[in-house]
Amino acid sequence: MGIFVNPNNDGFKQSLNSKIYVDKSGMIEITNNLLDTRQNCMCISRPRRFGKSMGIDLLVAYYSKGCDSKELFASLEIAKNPDFEKHLNKYNVIWLNLPKFKEPDCGFETVLPLMVKLLKKDLKKEFTNVDIQEEYPLQIILSEIYEKTNEKFIVLIDEWDFIFRESTNYKLQEDYVDFLRALFKDSPFIKLAYITGILPIKRYNTQSALNNFDEYSMIIPGAMAEYFGFTEDEVKDLCVRFNRDFDEIKAWYDGYLMPHNVHLYNPCSVVKSMATGMLTGYWNQTSSFEALRIPINLNLKGLRSSILELMGGTKIKADVSEFQSDTSLIEVKDEALTLLVHLGYLAYDQFTKEVFIPNREIRGEFDKSIKRSEWKEVVRALQNSEDLLTSTWNCDENAVAEYIEQAHDDIAAIIKYNNEEALRSVVSIAYYTAINYYQFKREYPSGKGYADLVLIPYKHVNKPFIVIELKKNDTPESAIAQIKEKKYSESLEKYSGDILLVGITYDDDKKHHCKIERMKKI
Image 1: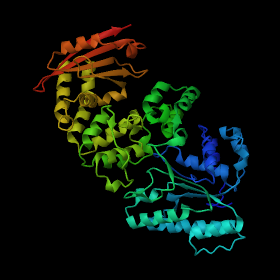
Image 2: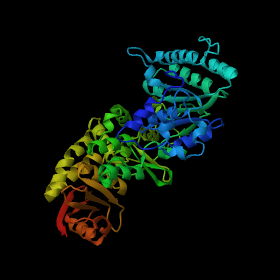
Image 3: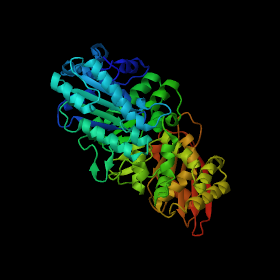
């Protein structure tokens, strides 16, 4: 047993010993089916804190010859599989966590040489019956071990894309890809290659640098969809166990759509919320603020408009096929939006080909990033949002009209105001602070109405239900009448208390008027 070759199962033990552990061992059935096949090279790309490292620990504990894990897996899903013991602790495992090889006060140039040096030492200790010459390339040493022992390797690399994300040294990146290609391409000593990262596999022009790897990403998750992130059923079980309100957890942390309508929740945020009992944004504790801020400040055609529409709750069509995993070479809006999908700041609907902000937690991250950006007009609208909401609660019709008019003027330069979806986005941004108290529900236009926004108060929040109708070249009284004509029974069914009907109109001169009517539902 070594550090990097045939490691022990301590990492998996820590997961099992944690207060919250959700069984994801079913993924082992998938990897077992790929052993010694043409599809035995896998790349899992997911945002930070989506369980990638825990997945590596799971595979180390199951496959490594350096430990006995039968008892650890006895109560887990994989133990029910008829092939469970066939592969249990039977193979030589190489485990590498790339950031661990970054020495303090040293450049990234030392990462790969140090990793290879330490790995060769471990191999020499493990295979004493093979004359290992440490000056030979790693792939040659592994080939000789296979030739002498007929034993293959399972190679597990966590954060394989670390050098791409952290270094701008293109020569170093190319050398690293050449190393991986030599290690994994047509290598008979590889039983399974399983690498994880945040970004998809690097491409150079139209040629994939590692084209023998099958990718399981946020955009094309494949069979691995449910194993990185918590499913809705898993979150419901946790809510029962910890006595948490599922609807509130859903509003905060749901939103990542996988095929077959599978909803995934950010596991790190859900675990922290269960443990602390607090509904808040945990994302900024685990992810780089700059990762969101940089794409937002890119001066790309149409990007600012799209970001604002996303913040307003609109879904945006996006071509996610051309992203090259190189953040310094982003040239068009869709590439920036695709990057945000891979980073977890946007979700992607495979069926509609649209991107959207997944939940309340991530909306908060956009809020913070915009407030620190160069978008002065939008920052002003967000800063006025709290006063607008207070004015709405107070039924101050003149103040509401003035704040909406100001938001209109500020944002119209970025979003074309007469577009119905964009209009809804403008109103949503103006009421942005309301996400602290309300779930937003947007109604599609009907009749003569341009935009509707329904604000449903969260449970245990003592605020009125708000329905907003905005019309052009009409009276606010007509907007109120139109609200009453529509049926909101589904939204109001479980609600009792004050209801504010807000009618807002504007004319060709962009002058706004407001009428607010308070109702009581018993």
